[in-house]
Image (tube, rainbow, N blue to C red; front, top):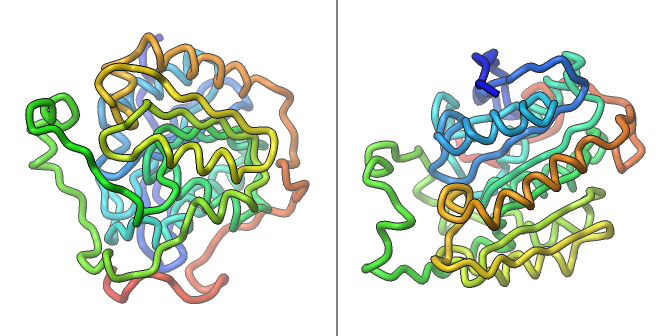
Length: 282
């Protein structure tokens, strides 16, 4: 299947920051929302390939630029409050009639943000979640980079596409996905490469242990210790079957009610839900 041209949409997060997302429409009532990780944009090659795969499965795809990335404004805060960006996109999709249930594929820190959104905005019709190399706790990230193999994980072009982020991120309190996931009423599948070089697979296990049922943990015994979307290109023989199984799961019955049982959905506006967690000017 060829990838169609997306519809580009813009929404405003709680603090007024503009968040951009691409919507790949297909004649279906199924939708998968993709949340890239840090240093990834909605037009990254692996994200475009994922949109194609989702479309080939018969579902529409929506992929956003988190704040500080791509066309979106603001500065990335490492799960400081980015779940509000995801909330704004999800509410927009529901308001437009694009989704009665929102299934999610999220990577790395994007997976932490997705978990936080599911836990803190339960009235949205969240469905099944595929979390790829998720971060359980930001303070527990200890990269194990080998200088002789680092080229397998990072590309030269990344140096010229740096995201905009909050330089005070080390000193600000962040939302902890390991704590949030206990309140997320989602059907979750967690996939992690064994001894992931950036986010150890212990993060995935911690989230799985604290997640409510239904839950599934897959630790991939792949060589290379690949992180997040690098699994798509470096270890497709391990990643693709998991993705295919997840997309088949998303073919389940559509419901106007998500796992939380809530139905009322309203647009988010910068003034309706309290104070922004982001520093002024961010």
